[in-house]
Amino acid sequence: MSKPSLSAITISLLALTGCATTIPKPTQANIQREEIQKQVNQAVQAHQICINQIATSPDYQTTINQVVVETETSENRFDLMNKKIRINQGQKKSLAAFLKDSTKCNQIHLQGLTGSPYLNTYENYYSQLDRIYAELLDGQITIGTANTRKLDLIDIRRNQHSQVTAALTDALQKMHTQEMKTREADSQANRARWAAALQSMSNSFGTTSQYYQNQNQQLQQNNQYQYRPPTNTTCQPNGVGGFNCTTR
Image 1 (spheres, one colour):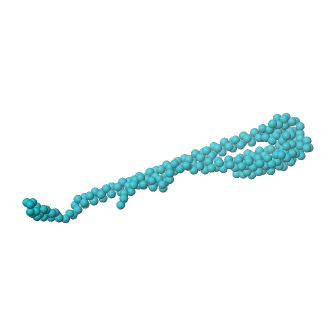
Image 2 (cartoon, rainbow, N blue to C red):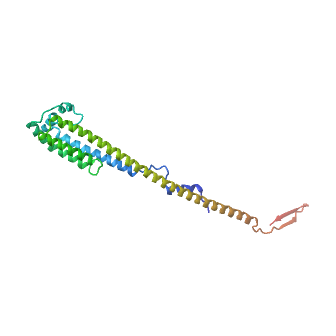
Image 3 (cartoon, rainbow, N blue to C red):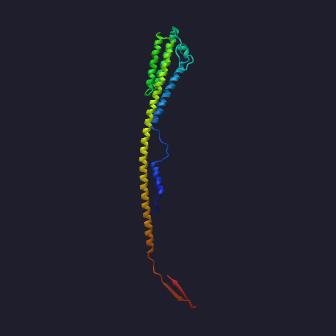
């Protein structure tokens, strides 16, 4: 019977417990962060695709050039903010058509954010924006006032977006830290179990080795006392003054 190898025992144990250098799985916090970011990106992309489809219409172009700024970086933003007049009938018609199309795009954006922590921010933004457009259509405010309020609203939305991002980042970081602490505790417990198992197998190997050593010693002792038949030597004269002897 061949003796077991300690290195073979160790290799078998490592095979059962897994390789220590395995790339760790992402935490649930990281997975959630990626999912939220993916959702936000997809919602923005869907909204932009919709805007691109309506941006070439005459009513859209009339509205963003003569009535309200398209974005906070539009080149005509200062000109529109300084207009102290109310919109005319032609501009009202274009603005009404603009709102009909852009509202569909806004709904696509909100639907894409369903369940997202950013949903409330954009719901409030679009709701407040609709109020500005309604007052502009009713002649309650000037073009300049409408654009000033829209740009202020964009700043508010951006700040709220940043606040949500900061709060979300903090919450996910705490979640990630807690998960890593739990993993480390589990890992330490596993390492302790592996070490105990390895020590137990090592002790077993030592006991087995001692057994084989004892067996070998016993065999050697037995060989010393092994039965040997007696010898018998006979000699005959060889005729030349000597003897020829034979041992059996």
